[in-house]
Length: 124
Image (cartoon, rainbow, N blue to C red; front, side, top):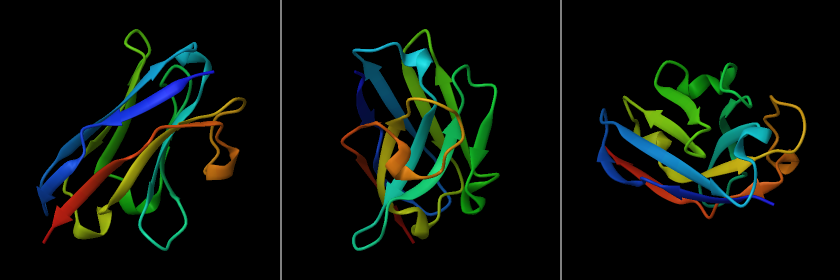
């Protein structure tokens, strides 16, 4: 079983940048496709980006394409989300997740392991 811990959230002005990290422990990190989701109060958890086991394949939700980049370093058991040109609508709690099985799912309920989340607030 893998444990996940996000870091790097905080407050940033619109147009700024921020990098989130997700550190994994307790399992073989490279065995899992990984993803970022985000959630605002009163709404369902939303898919942001997903990355394959070795990092060679990625996919993004349309609203972040061209602004966010997902990556992973399997030697460091860490996944990243580089967020540029941030907008107030990107404000949310961001979660990292690991999935047992095939890569590519955008459905949060198909992910098996979750971090505790990190708050990202973008001010206008």
